[in-house]
Length: 92
Image (cartoon, one colour):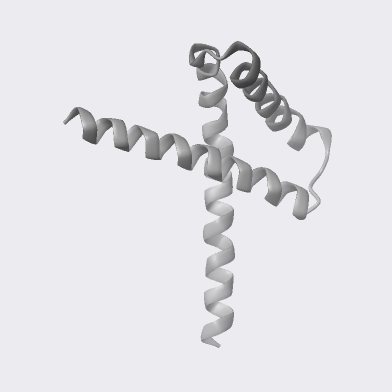
């Protein structure tokens, strides 16, 4: 049971990081760049990278990880929407 939970949470963490990155790239590609849409994700990413590199303690990353989850959901939704558009174009 312990190994199953470890694998599940490792998978969840990787997916949050992946979809957070996709969401940030999607904002840049769609050119919705204004201070309101970019400042929080960039600040979160910068602080996570700082604490991962210099502090090396995961306890400092946890508050930022919680903030990353909504942006990861945004990235996931954008991927799903892009796939739906692609599928609808291919089916026509």
